[in-house]
Image (cartoon, rainbow, N blue to C red; front, side, top):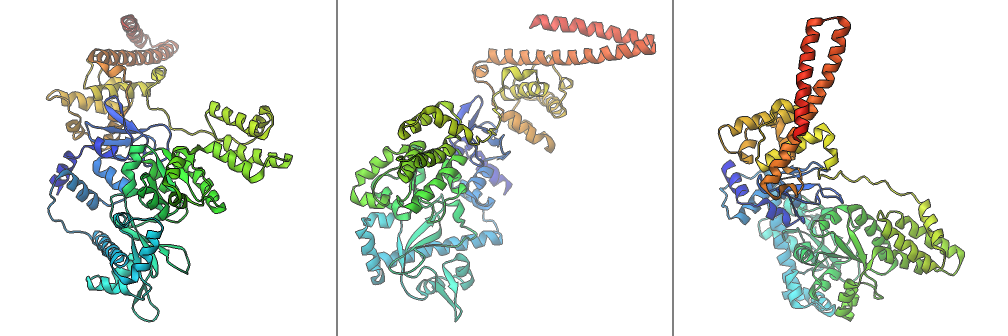
Length: 584
């Protein structure tokens, strides 16, 4: 099995794989981007094409292609291996599946069969005729209904349960899927009776759950499958499996409130659209969306509850670090606007307003500007948002705009914004080495060793004893020994390292190096020699400082023989330091 795992890894380009989820940019020998596993505004996520690994210096997530795929897709090792093997064209030998894997596979099969059943009832069976007519009256085409595999669950007790039982699924498995519920009388009954069915798929397109919209009278309006081994509503977005490619293409996602909003939008050509499964939006959903683009257009219903939901979405999207815009139109929701005129919907998305324009506009519409009290309320509400803007030019622009809208002085708005509590910025440190920081010994040693490893250029003037950091010293010593017999290859060298040095080695080989240094071999050699000389100088000065103290102690204690030896060493090292500084 290990050989198969290595075969899958060797045929999987980690940069290509991760680029499907994260926007990567070249950074010296490596690539960098915003980490998809935690919220950040400064790139601390590095990928090494040579070593085929990734590492986030912000949250410490790291590993190989399989590790990344498991984490990003929220799947176990076996599924990650199987899916990457399929992509890589590797045929895996039959392995004995563990009970959890078997159960997940059964649930996926149940959901797929249920989706086919619901779709058949909607499109081919008499009991689904009225629901089909309703969807067509809402403007959905037969192609759209087929592409999204929409369905209908009739108002009967256990039609789906009977159908799935005939497919040899047990009653226990059907209950685990959430598609049926145990009856107090006998047997089970269908959960989604009398509902139009929207299959919910994971990012790879597998049906993992369902959303049912009531058809006729009944509550709740929308009902989702419960969480299961294969579904967590906080980690999924309706339509993302179809929209993800379009989001990357447009470099922007459109977030709508309802399933029909998303489907109608997709049908008329705005395909970079998703919905939060009819429940409250979560930060996990936004983090998932951010993998494909940092730019977000929010288009929730225009009623009071929709505006309230949009405000919550804005707060979360800002925390996640997304660039937010909002649509503005008179109709109730995107679906209604699309049915009225698809062109107007496209225009609404294209002309969506920056978040702060929207907030000012909504506050003015809510309170008005005709009285001092109204002006106070608008200013107070908007100031709470403006104070969070870190860019001073942007903040100043909106302070000026708010003052103009309210007909008050700009100074008064600036003062009100200033009264609000500005959050402290806790950005992760920049990884690019600041040249002025090379006076810090640990930074210098890390930078030098990173240069040596990434460029495979070993200087002759230093040895392992020159590194004060024990881990760096051990790695350099092992590096010298390794290169005595063979050419440096990072993958091969990594295998010779003890386990306690592996994470430090990862950090060194993924550390971002200045691009101007890596332009040609001469600059690389010059930079390494400069850093090596600087390290020698630091060591000499440190030793001279220690000798000065030792000489004073020897003088006090009148240890003449020891004093002579110390003075001799001091003089020699002083000469060495003079020579070294002249060479610089």
